[in-house]
Length: 84
Image (cartoon, rainbow, N blue to C red; front, side):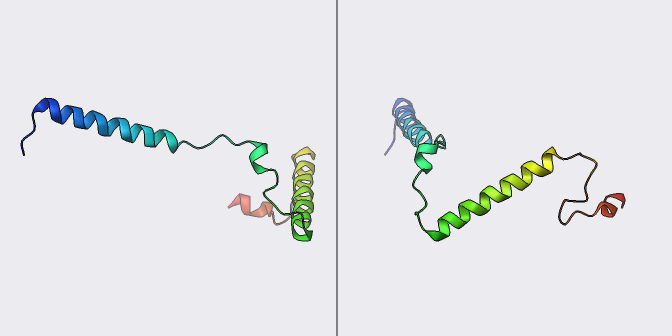
């Protein structure tokens, strides 16, 4: 089954068009809060996770707003390890 050059090019063009269409479908979708709302059930575990997340974010904000030279309140941070 011999194909002419023109037939081979046409077949390749069809395959490239098909793969391009598939690649467009693989693009990451834009993150949108409306897609996330309601993804967690409204139960005790979800509310606890929300509370802990809020507490963690507040602690991070607190650490960022403190004086940059005061590392005494950062849990698990050992300044002496920086000198090695």
